Image (cartoon, rainbow, N blue to C red; front, side):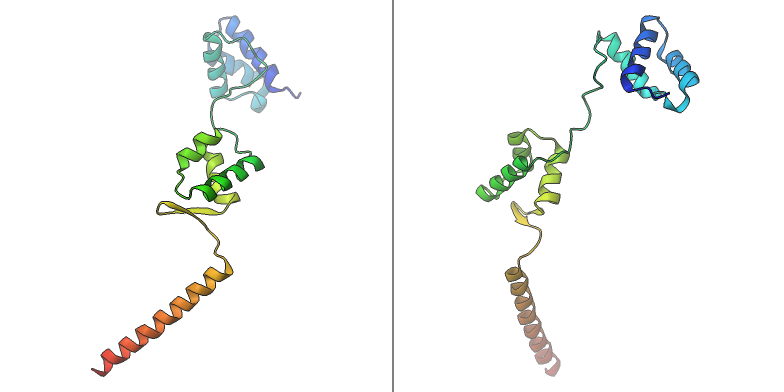
Length: 155
């Protein structure tokens, strides 16, 4: 038998109204439904909600981690913020968009491939010009090192 969450919530509410303890409710549900029954924590949480006066059984708990569904408008907004002010902080991004920490991290690091280096946001992937510049700089430094080492060795 496939029961949805709302069916189980109704049964938990019934046991609550029947003045059973949460532990007894858990035992009865586990006996009747086995592994399909809600876990002990869920039953205890619902008992706590009912004690606070909650009677709406249609939705589950709303607290916990925020959704990490990343919207394109949020990605564009973060990209615009960084272009405007490269010193923008994590907290400012989160506060202005009203998003959670995990969504903020996902947008910055996964979708935009940005990395915070010192106080600036920089693209994590280098452009071809930047890569070429780094190779040129490294080769010049290496040649200079070889000259200094050769002069030191001769002396």
